[in-house]
Amino acid sequence: MSSLHVEGGRPLQGRVAVPGDKSISHRALLFASLADGTSRVRNLLRGGDCQATLACVRQLGVLVAQDAAGTVSIEGRGLRGLVEPSSVVACANSGTTIRLLAGLLAGQRFTSFLSGTPQLQSRPMGRIVDPLREMGARIIGRQSGRFAPLAIEGSPLARLHYTLPVASAQVKSCLLLAGLYAEGGCVLTEPAASRDHSEILLARMGAELEIDGLRVAITPPESLQAFELDVPGDLSSAAFPLVAAALLPGSELCLSGVGVNPRRDGLLEALTSMGAVLRRESLCEAGGEPVADLVVHPAQLHGAEIGGAQIPRMIDELPLLAVAATQAHGVTRVRDAAELRVKETDRIATTVAELRKLGAHIEAAPDGFVVEGPTQLRGAPVNSHGDHRLAMALTIAGLLAAGQTTIMGAEVCADSFPGFVDLLRTLGAKLAEVEA
Ligand code: S3P
Image (cartoon, rainbow, N blue to C red):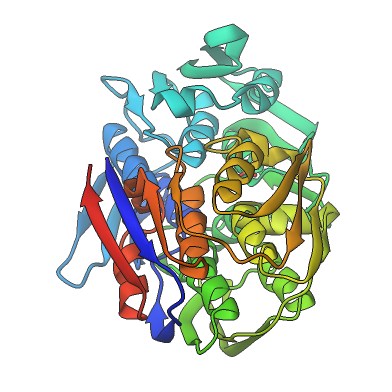
């Protein structure tokens, strides 16, 4: 376990690129495995969660290689070419890995066992197991299938018509993958728009998708085509230096080549509504995804009301938004975000508990939190609780605080953002890693 010492008060200056998008990287590895032919992916995320997905597809017989320039080649085995894994498929700490794989494996002609860390085993799986069982999937898990480990005995799947109880791209993507194998495919309706990276990539691979507002239908294809992909920078990673630079006087930051999919950019919208000065430049497209350079300057923020359809568009950024809200004039209220309670940690409870240690005025609500600002945060020891996004949000809080903040268990930043500490240092932050 490592701790990170953070010195507050220094501006962030410079132009940097953040690592590839985590959600897109998972999908690139999983979907390419089902393609006919070899897919080539540049800027694939090397974070712990995607390394887990890479190891899982290898367990299913997929060959993955990397050339000197860092391009990753994935030799697809076709829709029916995966092989039965000889041991438990290890999903590490990654919810995206286990949920998408469960959908992909439900319609195979072999049996698989999926598990991961104790933290992953405590996350809800009923949300995928129930609709998969409706399709005819044979799945066993702890507490009647509510928790991993999961055993999946591949079986023929039937058409599904399903309304998701929560807006979740993991559930939607799991069911789309199962739909590739279901007689008659599946039709899904979401309560609000979640990220659509699966739909974008599957359509590029030649899958027949029909999208109408919050409804998506997939027809099982004969085959899927291999693809070339440049993974955009991850907006959920760019968000950390971006918020620091939006608040620290003297900062001037450009984050280049960041994915700005409209189903992911809720934080940019929220910060702008709070008075932040940020621009999108050089807008272009990569692999069907919009990409831009994000330029940010510091400004005085004010509080905002955040809820409804905004929430799935910034679900992973909400702990960081709480940090920004501590510096905003007035009250910031986040509602409709009960999903935060079933992330890597209960992110309402952990964000509130840890930010209070730094002096923040923040109260938990059943489905969100309320922050009153502005507050001069004061450096103190805080804990990541093994949650990468919390660790990074606390690092940004440390940059805004007076004195030194120490984040215990900071090594988890690498689950989604390898090089996080070095990137902040490049921009002028003073950070020191200490092995505990
Ligand atoms: C993800 C979807 C979101 C998000 C997670 C990644 C994905 O989870 O929080 O970090 O790649 O599909 P939910 O689908 O559970 O909301």
